[in-house]
Length: 127
Image (cartoon, rainbow, N blue to C red; front, top):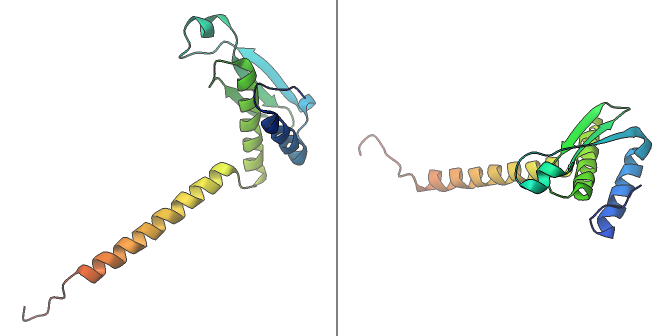
């Protein structure tokens, strides 16, 4: 496996994640395409966009977030692993984040409901 322009810890994490999901480098088809968007002349002259296809599952990922090809290669692999996890039914980091936000909103809604129910004056028939 290649070493990408990220910290050694992130490279190690990526290798471990790929091993745990059973994804091999040989199963990944990688192509480099010219990016679009911000970056000016640099983006127009170099092929920094990374396209990955996981042959066994058919999942495709295209990453052109950064101006660096090496960094885009890392980000594309990370995104590919997230999609493979999602397809396998494993909770991804994004899913956990959404669940946390959903719980926070429910808690706030419950508190607001209790607060405003307690603050309502009771109106009887003679008032």
